[in-house]
Amino acid sequence: MTKAVTENGPGNEPGNEPEKPAPERLSAAETWRALYGYFRPHRAVVALGALCTLIGAATGLAQPLAAKALVDRLGGDESIAGILVVLTALVVLGTAIESIGAYVLERTAESVVLAARRTLIGRLLRLRLPEVERTQPGDLMSRITSDTTLLRAVTTQSVVSAVAGGLSFIATIVMMGLMDAVLLGVTLGVIVLIGGAMSLVMPKIARSTERAQEAVGTISTALERAFGAFRTLKASGAEQRETEVVQAAAEDAWRHGVRSAKWQAVAWSSVGLAVQVSFLAVLGIGGARVASGAISISTLVAFLLFLFYLIDPVSRLVEGATQYQVGSAAIARIVRAERLETEDVAGPVDGSGQDGPASVAFEDVTFRYREGLPHVHHGVSFEIPGPGMTAFVGPSGAGKTTVFGLIERFYEATGGRVLVDGRDVREWPLAELRAAIGYVEQDAPVLAGTLRENLLFGAPDATAAEIQDALVRARLDTLVERLPDGLDTLVGHRGSQLSGGERQRVAIARAMLRKPRLLLLDEATSQLDAVNELALRDVVAEVAREVTVLVVAHRLSTVTLADRIVVMDAGMVRASGTHAELVAADPLYGELAATQFLAASA
Image (cartoon, rainbow, N blue to C red; front, top):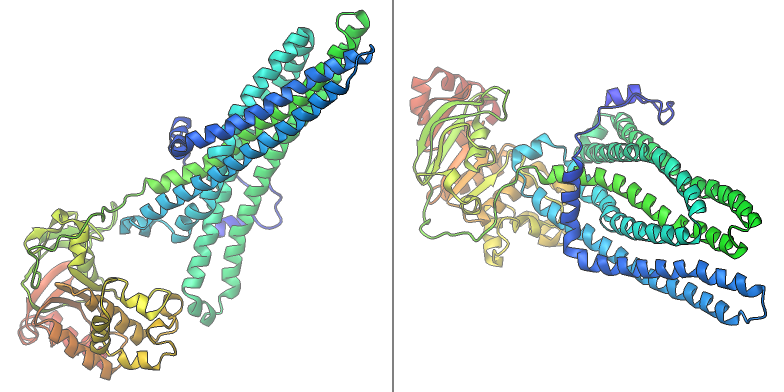
C-alpha cells in the first residue's frame, strides 16, 4: 500500500502513474465458458428479450422505406396520410416492443446477479481455512458485492446488445446495399477504419476495470481491518493513518475507474465520429450521383435515414463489446474466487454408534501451514483415551493450538495420522466429525446479533431448558438477568457490548450446548476473574467425567486439575504424565510450573 501511495500520489493525473502488473487474466475461451454458465439457466428468457429487441429493430428498418415512399409521393398528387399513419404506427409499436424487451432483460440481469451471489456465498463460506488465511476477507466480500454487479451487464446486455446489434447491422447494410452499392462502400470504408482503431481500445477498458475492482477489494479489506479493531485504532491514535490507507485505495480505484471511463468515452465518441464522417461522405458523393441521374433524391434521403439508423446497431455492438470488457474483468475475479478450495460439509450427520467420549491419537504427525514455511509439528505422537481432561502446555510457538486445528481438520497433516475414535480424521465426513466436537477458540469470538443467536449458533435446535442449563453452568444466568432484553439483547459487533470474560463464557456455553463427545478449550478461561475461573474449572471437571476434554492452558490452576498433561516444545511432544510426575521428571515443565504458570495464576 505504501508503494501505491508513493508512486500514485494524489497529484498524479490518471494515465500518468506507473503501470502495476496486471492480475492474471482468463483466456477468452475460459471467459466465454464462465459467461455461458451464468447465462445458460436464463437463455430462454434472454432469447425472448432479444426477440423483442429484434422486432423493435425491424420496425425501425421499415421507417426509411416508408420515408422514401413519402418523398416519392410528394412529387405527385397521391395522398400521404396513409404513409404518415404507417410511420407513426411503426414508431409506437417499435418503442412498445423494445420497452418490453428491455424490462425482460433487466429482470433477467437481476436474476443472474442473485444466482451468482448465491453460488459465491455458498462457496466462500465453505472455503478451507488456509484459503481464507491467504486471501483478505474484504476482497472476498467485494467479489460478492461489486463484482457480481458488473456481471449483470455482460450476461444480458452484452450478449443481447451484440446479437441484436449484429443482426440489425447486417440487415441495415443489406438494405443500404439494395439502395446504392457505391454509397454503401463509402459508408463501410469509414466504419472499418474507425472500428479498427476502436479494437485497440477494448482491452484497455478490461484492464482498467479489473484494476479498479481490485482496488475496491482493497478498500473493503482496509475498512474491515479498521472496524475489526476499532478500539485499538482509537487507543493508538491511528485514525488519520488508517484514513490515509483507505483513501489511498479509494484514489487507486478512482484512477483506474477514470482510465476505464476515458477509454469508454473514446469508444462511444468513435461511433458518433464514424456516422458523421460517413454522413458527410455520403452527402457529398450521393449529391453528385443525384446530379448525374445515377440515383433519385428519394433514394439519397432513404440512404441517409438508413445511415442514421445505423447508429443504433453500431451503438449496440460497441455497448456489447464495452460491457464484455468490463464484465470479463468481473468474471475473472469471480472465477478465481470459485476456484478456491472448499470443504465438503454437505449431507446429514450420522451419529450412529458414536455415543460416549471420543478418543484422540496423533501418530508421528508432521505439519506446516504451506509449502516453503518451516514445519510446526515434527513427528508429534500421543494417545488420549476418553473421558477425562488432558492439558497441553509448553512455550509459545510449540504447536499446541495447531493440535486442535488438525483435529478439527481446519488443516490437513502433511505427514502421519490424526485419529478420532481410532479412525483417521480424513476418513470422517466433515459434518459428522465436527458435530462430535465442541471448540472454544483462543479469542472466544462472539458474533454480531443477540445473545440467544450466539448460544444457538452451534446447536440451533437446543430447547429452552438446555439453554438455561448451559447458562447456569457457564455462570451466565446472572448476566442474562441484568441485560435489558435478556437473551434477546444485542451484543454488538464481535460482542463489543460484553467483557472479555463474558465473551469467553458465552463461547463455553455455546460449545456445551452442542453436547460434544470431544471438547477443545484453547485458553478458554484466560480472561476470567478468579471467582469465575474457579467456577468454570469445576464445570469443566464435571464435564470431563463424561466427555473427553483437551485444554491448552497457561494457568497452573487449570493444569493441575488435568488427568494427564502433554508437554510440547518446538513442535514435538517432550513428555507426558501427571503434574507431580512431570515436575519431578521434566526440567522444562518444572521451569514452566515455577514461572509461567505461577505468574499467570497470580
